[in-house]
Image (tube, rainbow, N blue to C red):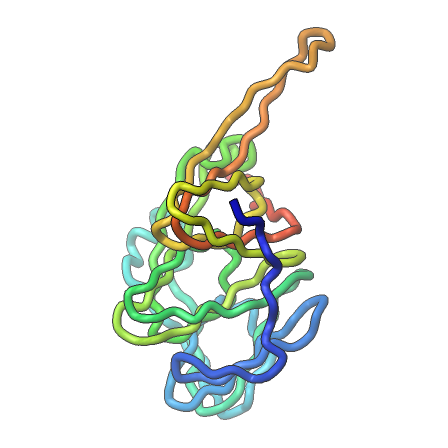
Amino acid sequence: MPVPVQISLPLAEESHGGVAYQILGELVPVLQVEMTSSHIYFEHHVLLWKDPNVEIGLKTLDGAFKRIISGMPVLMTEARGPGRIAFSRDGAGQVFAMHLHPGESVDVREHQFLAATDSVHYNFKRVKGIGNMLFSGTGFFMDTFSCPHQDGVLWLHGYGNVFQIELKHGESIDVEPGGWIYKDHNVGMETIFQKFSSGLFGSAGQIFWNRFTGPGKVGIQSMYYYLPTTE
């Protein structure tokens, strides 16, 4: 089986999905995007700066009623060009781009999303039981981003350093539940539990991880991220 390899970031400006962008900085990196006719949507708290002529508004998401029931945000923030805009998340790590083509889809761990072009469609699902110990038995939400018709760009943030592994059909890797960022939509994911006993005073415990099975890519971050536990 292959091993995860650290992703490399482009040194120069790149273009895809109707926008030009550059990722600057190392410890707490900044995503800088130049828009012409395309739009970008993002979480409102990641905006760092913008040109005065860039218009900011609210983007209503499909399935708003389901999101209200699930406690998810009903609205995201949208930027309209022409002009430049920059984003940064308040955390040490890596910002990286995923270039999506028509028909491609990727599942993303919640709160790793930074921004996306408007050609990238967003949905979500509740994943129950993946982190019973970490999330008080409530599970968590997994975002799904896809490009049904046009090329698009999805920008994500990983804590620490970001690595990627490409699994062949039937190959698997076990990842600490706080360590994964994204997976190709067709990559399988299940939770594996292992009980063990220390033999000291009869004490026992358990360890668990997420097992991903290919084919497809999986992104891993070196700094574990745990969500606040809520009931």
